Amino acid sequence: MLKYQEIAIEIEKYIEENALQQGDKLPVLETLMTQFAVSKSTITKSLDLLEKKGMVFQVRGSGIFVRRHKRKGYISLLSNQGFKKDLEDYHITSNIIELDVRTPTEEASHNLNIEPNADVYYVKRIRYINGQTLCVEESYYNKAIISYLNKEIVSESIFDYIREGLGLKVGFTDSYLHIDKLNDEEANYLGLNKGDPKLYVEGIFHLTNGQPFDFSKVTYNYQQSQFFIQSNGYLL
Amino acid sequence: MLKYQEIAIEIEKYIEENALQQGDKLPVLETLMTQFAVSKSTITKSLDLLEKKGMVFQVRGSGIFVRRHKRKGYISLLSNQGFKKDLEDYHITSNIIELDVRTPTEEASHNLNIEPNADVYYVKRIRYINGQTLCVEESYYNKAIISYLNKEIVSESIFDYIREGLGLKVGFTDSYLHIDKLNDEEANYLGLNKGDPKLYVEGIFHLTNGQPFDFSKVTYNYQQSQFFIQSNGYLL
DNA sequence: TTGATAAATTATACCGGTACAATTATAATA
DNA sequence: TATTATAATTGTACCGGTATAATTTATCAA
Image (cartoon, rainbow over all chains, first blue to last red; front, top):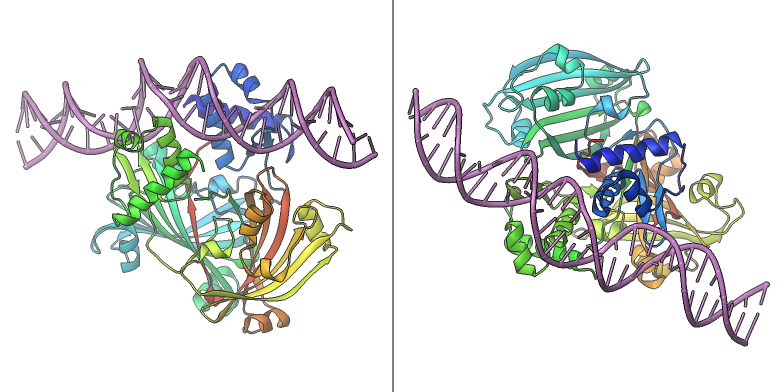
């Protein structure tokens, strides 16, 4: 673990333990420097990390402040670490319907940047939140990268397995959000009616080196789904 | 304009002019350093900015690569610079239905963190994309911050006015995305039917100092709306 | 050809400095 | 009191350096 990451975690803990609220001020840079006995640039990196994550915001000439949205129950569209991380506070369960090796759909092979006849792991599952159907999820994993999967792994956090089991590093994600109307089959899965709002998100997950390894289509139960998005305004 | 911002723009230009595609490699750090005659840390900041913006990704030990999603026609949920910036390539027009000073709804005053009897500018408008209804937008601007608005300003980019006219700096935004079903009135505005999917986004826009100045509710025509979200995976 | 090993390449981590700019607090002035 | 000028506070920009770790390329052995 890198210094600036550890310090970021420490600062998060500090915010938690002191129950700091939105707008509350953190100790000044120099205090943090001496406190953690590192150079200014390291503290700065830690704060940049926390800013990216949306935990703090910095105001030049003024200080470092806590940023935190108040509303609960929202799924963050920005973290790409999978459900386990996103919704720790909720009771999320899932039911794996299918898991096999197959050749991908044209759409999947295109998004994974592999040959149409290459092997992929296909996983279809339903997720529940507090007993209600949250979403139906279809995932295609590039088998050349994710060489092995089974039900146990898929039941736990696939992303943890990818990192720790396979030693790979998850990088950026491109997501595409669409709205449509449910057809009969989809409505049936979600316990809704045909013609009800259909919210689905396509996600292309990449390793840190830019290789896509997972293409997923997630259809949400619109009644259970509220999303939260943070943005930080860059001006170029 | 700061050095690292200028260089970021130059690098973007370079990508554009050389028509670099996703995965193409940029010159190595040292080359960029000497090219722009700045120190390593400045180049690094430029690249960080471009990475935030989703233009490039960096791979330690390998290089700096172009990141660009291929699909077109998506509204980015991450930039908080308003529509004018997001959809430059499309023909966006808008029709202002209401513009007045009033006291905010309870919801708006809460989200703007002002007294219930404080003054706000209320703006209601419909936006069109290539002649079709894109969305209906209701905005509440804290009049203590946005002291003056008129139809001309609102017709142009409000965000440009806030920056250039008022000399304020736009910082972060919290957005909340919901799905529901349209009621009669909403359906009428959008040219859809009652019960059709309703996609609406609440946005709370802040200045760089953390003050909220704009609370907006945007109801989209689901047929015209596809959203794009980039995320960069931080691991804390 | 394959596979392991070593070397070269390359970006990142971290340091500690100076100068600067935005904000806020203080003091002076009307 | 209200306004304006001044000073103190505080984070950011930028420099240039050393050390390190990830990746790729080259080399060598089987």
